[in-house]
Amino acid sequence: MVSKFAIAIVAGAVVMIALVLFPGFDQSPERNRLDLEYSKQFLTRSVNGSLFASNAQLLVIRDDGSATYTNITGPAIEEKSFTIGSEELKSLRGLILETGFMQIPVSELPQQEGLANFTKYTIRAQADTDAKTISWTESDSIGETAPALIYAIRDPLEGIIAKNG
Image (cartoon, rainbow, N blue to C red):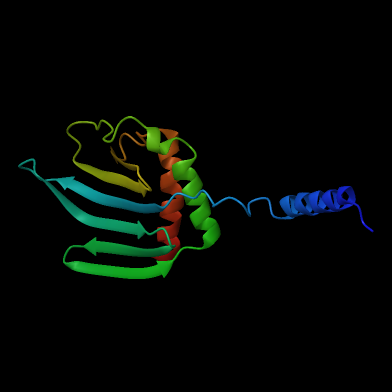
């Protein structure tokens, strides 16, 4: 007859093996929902000082990987829908949620006054219960003006546009 002690040892070993093979089986996955919007406007200041956009681009990426790219040039509107790969989506999620982007204290970075031609960028991230929008401007004469973290997020978004736009 098998002793209760032997049964307890075998049962404990089975539980330990299960924990090693399936470490997260007793936990729900901790994953934040994330929706992203990235926009870029090419702005020109007219003689009377008003601004107009010669071109505007909008990239929207949903949590499920579905994406839409819209390019507006004058009266022409071009829109494309596509899907972001899971690795690319995972990388974007990490850049937004794990690098401190959501904790950047400002939402509008200072811009240089009097620029005639410049580009305005906006990144908007919506996580489960947190949202962050950061806008900044650049011109050829002043170059990059945002913190490096912003460019670490912008550059892959530009790559997605180049690949799918």
